[in-house]
Image 1 (tube, rainbow, N blue to C red):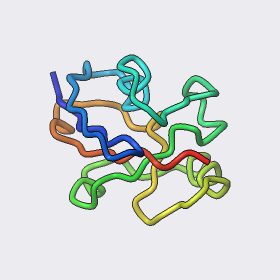
Image 2 (cartoon, one colour):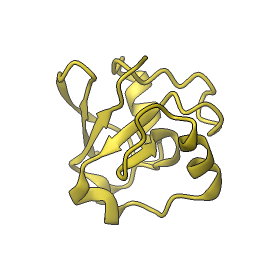
Image 3 (cartoon, rainbow, N blue to C red):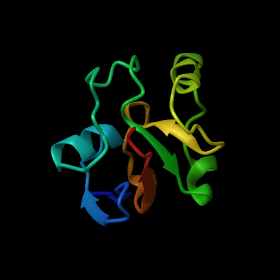
Image 4 (cartoon, one colour):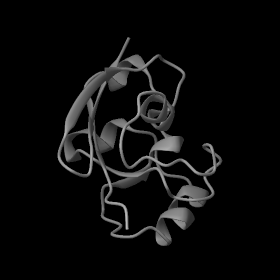
Length: 105
């Protein structure tokens, strides 16, 4: 099972096993990761699962689609490595992925 490293807004680092087929957001919500609210339940319509992907992992993720890009336009503190975790499916290739949860305001 792939391990995903979540860094919560306060800097707490948690390394969790997340089953293949789940999203990075589901892994966070099922394990109580602070800052991943997921208000829309993963429908890509709220940006409350906004996170920063470690730069070394960006090219290993599928490209961002238009809906995700539009939702991130409304996100606070969007950066070049911003993604919505509801749009990232966990695969074996993502073992070790580092995700920093965006601050909540």
